[in-house]
Image (cartoon, rainbow, N blue to C red):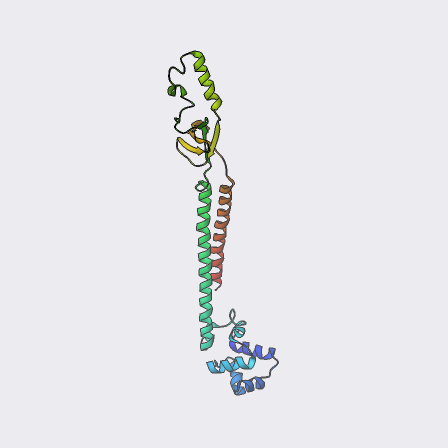
Length: 242
């Protein structure tokens, strides 16, 4: 649609005759006729008079011309040229926003999926530690497994004394298991209310325990990755359409 055709269409929509619109614009009817027949391009001052006569602002006027108007001819009018420049800035900003958002989604999606797949933040390898019982202050860490080294020969002089001492340490035992996704070394000491506990790693009891968080990270990562690709596709379609 040409500018002249559009002016004529707007005039007819408002039920104005050519003389009536020319009077409201304070221009001659012959000049308005030239505009409607595309024999002339209005000056910026005349264009503003046209908008005032039609009671339209620039955005409302351009709404019917943006996609189907002849931009090369329209931009001969300074106000319309500035309007198109502003439109281009908004479109460029929108494209950049789409592009940045899409790239962030792809990057974050890849990072989340990889983190969940490699169990970086939520390890699934669980370590099992075992403690024989509580130790009092000053008692050696291996008391329950090598107690005979820490008693005098007179205390276990006879078989009965030895059995009695062994039974005493057996009764003191209070076995406890400690599970951890974090490797705490081959052994560690844990303070307790009445002393401490000595935990040793049970190497043959290491196991893999699936954690829902890793599955969720992989799922969300995949969703973000696909959303990012879709965003890039939409951005390209939008760019071509412009």
